[in-house]
Amino acid sequence: MRQRTRLRGAPVLILALLFCLHASGTLRTTPAAAAEKQVSAPRPKLVKLPFAFGKGMENTPFVYEGRPLIAMNHRDDTKNNTDGYKKSMYLFIRDLQTGEEIGRFGEGHSFVSVFVNGKEVNVFASEGSNRDWFQSIYRFWSTDLKTWKRQLAIPLEGGEHLFNCSVCRDGQGYVMAYESNKPVQFCFKFARSKDLATWEKLGGLVFTGAKREYSACPVLRYFAPYHYVIYLHAAVPGHNGWVSFLARSKDLTTWELSPYNPILSAGTGEGKNNSDVDLFEWEGNTYLYYATGDQATWGAVRVAMFMGPMKAFFESHFPEGVGMIKVSAKAE
Image 1: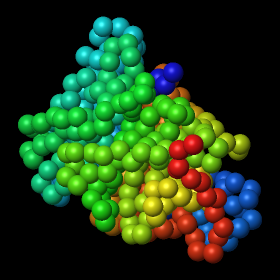
Image 2: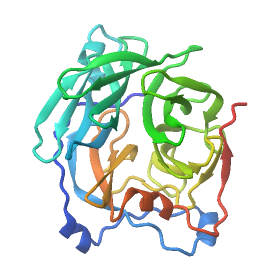
Image 3: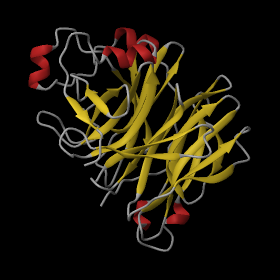
């Protein structure tokens, strides 16, 4: 059973450019042996900034009307399988520069994800339950971060449960990757929308990695002609616990895995987990927010910085002329 500590965070954005320029502790994760033989370009540098937000897990940093904000969720997993579990859940937004909480909503929901569409902030989250894990995914939206409306986005089906999701815009409208526990625990599926309100599932597509393996916590972005997804992978040799992988696709069906995978793995003080990545671009640099811990009793949110825009971050993980592992999302 998937259990994680999801408690209230108190984040404050630290854009420590001076630290990053002089930091010696750049993120180092060893590529797979096959990739090492192929890749001559240096590994893209991520700098893990020297702070944590305290207790937390899923989150989305985003910019709204020029302000850097973060959406997070509170959930008390000690109440799992009790009458008070669902009541312990809610979503909230903080200002990353002041640390002030500026909005709380979505009682009974968790696994927060944000997509900003002009003046409108769209928040997607899974509805919790007291004794039956997580259910369908709902959309919340607001133009003032105070008054929120709610509607069903992705209904569960076939006895599945739904968890994390992520939305981006591409040339056809909006596309969502959403996490399920079926047919593989865990995997992610896809849906499309023209208006962020009505969603159509893309039947026959299920991302399960290279070997029908654990593929959780997707975060999706699009820079033509590629969709990029960062997702959580189970432990691999030479790394500590759960690690984050990166893949890209032109059609959501055939995916290429970055030869630099895993792009994030737990270091000193991070337990055995680098999961639940989300990211944004701020003042020309890219910040990856990720969760540490043990996926059971504790977790904190930390930040890794790539010195450059998000498009460059993704492209740098797929060097030209390098053979890459390809996987298919066609459902078997």
